[in-house]
Length: 446
Ligand SMILES: *Cc1c(COP(=O)(O)O)cnc(C)c1O
Image (tube, rainbow, N blue to C red; front, top):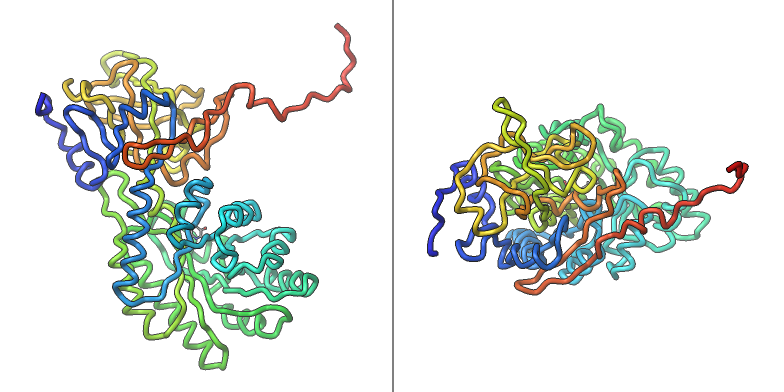
């Protein structure tokens, strides 16, 4: 067989155009980079998360190179909440990345993978006293302070510990990132950051407080942003702020530009690192700052996918497409249920591509109508037993999984070319209640 018998639907073709790492081979079926998903699915079963380390590495290198090409000094702090698996952190640490963390747990994870403390920055609107103390004790590179109250609390903790805390003030620039309302963070109505109008006042206080070393500012306006326009607006506001602070005699050495670079889920354009680098060069380079970024989704999202299997094909009559019920569910990947997210889905086996296309509803088996993966998706006809891949699931996928409906956590596999390794074994059913205790205080009246 040398060619696909059925032509691909135009929607599938345009999806493939924005996903150069995904190819359909007439003999091997679906390839993810150079990884054969058929081999992986048959070896590990489903549902399984796949991270392709070659793709992750090349995305990191492209991002890093974009700044180098512009002679920009930019530290990349991987926003590990997108996927903090130790194998991923280990790879990125070896590439030279630092980490953007949002909890004490993430701090310990980052340190465990030998990311130097100096390359860690700590964001988050509600840090506990213990978390702040740990951050000061381990002398992380930067704490992004999100309120005046936090600044004062941190100063007290740092005095007790007897060390200095290096800080940036996270500023809310009141810029609309025009993304999903649940992932926008830079509007005045959002809880994040210090109000723009109060920034200078709080920065002056930072200079007066004991054991605080002010480095500068931080701005993170949201997630899944494809256009440079909101970044330009936010950066310009920060330029004004930095100039104002410097005019009043306060040093500003650092600007943390945040993350949020968007990826192509369907066929929307992906944020382009070269454009972001060019924007930073134009707007920020004249201020001679140490720059930082905090990308999560852009690095790991397209580097991962979820393999699932069709359990049943349910024909509910002439008024609805067939329901394809798969063995992955909202407890594995919650993004469709939570953000109405669209994820590309394709069958894995080469035989599937010999079948005609049809409109399908794809759902998980969980007892919730929100447990939906796709509506009216035109795909080669799917049959029970078919393996499928759900793409762009590396970010905010496995890390948001739960065991709802007593469904064990899926296996996680990392691939490198034709090599593969389990990086997290499939959870067993018994694991689910391993830590559950039944108190003995009820009378035993049977
Ligand atoms: C979530 C988050 C990021 C990463 O966002 P992405 O969209 O995954 O790049 C960066 N910085 C902060 C402060 C965050 O909360």
